[in-house]
Length: 123
Image (tube, rainbow, N blue to C red; front, side, top):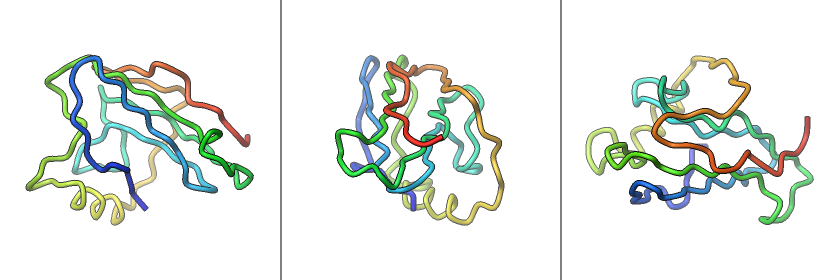
């Protein structure tokens, strides 16, 4: 299930967004993608890479996180209110059948990870 809480945030250059991977258990990722290809990291976007959350994880303090700091006021992190909305994006992602190759290290353009994902659990 595609879920972000909150599902929308307003950010400006220099803002840090902290993604908390709290789906237990699971292999999760957050990536900048295009509406037409919701499961493929966008060239020039950011990607946390896959983060495993162990079934043994039981406290919010031990959930893996990915911090992203924006570098550009002109880039959006939010889906628009009309047209290609967040719920529309979720429907497209749920229907996607493509398999995306794993990336081995976090990356990004116009945003950067301020800390490595962690704590990482599992193998």
